[in-house]
Image 1 (cartoon, rainbow, N blue to C red):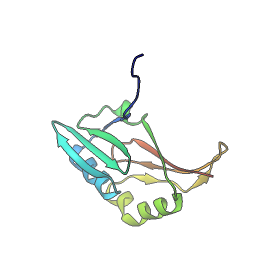
Image 2: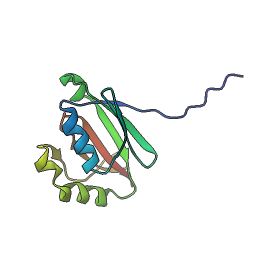
Image 3: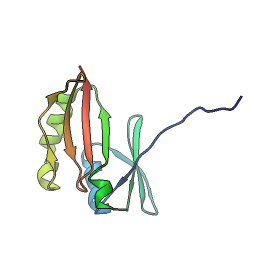
Length: 121
């Protein structure tokens, strides 16, 4: 029988300004574990993604990352208080209750990638 076990699934996130995006993700709490040949590996606990020194506007502005957290209020407050919205000229929405049974808010990264940060109700 074939071993079809999965170890991880990681998204390659585009960056318009690689240096700026690396600073942004570090400031919001992700740890940079490596940075080689235009690909930086970021993680926070057991979740991770690969930031790439590549930008295509249509891709960046249509990519949605979904981050499920335990305490959405703490995440929202931390991001607002961190000053990243002003520093990186980005956006964070208010927390809303979705009809599919989650609380969430949207954060845009400096390249226009949408992050839906959510908590199960």
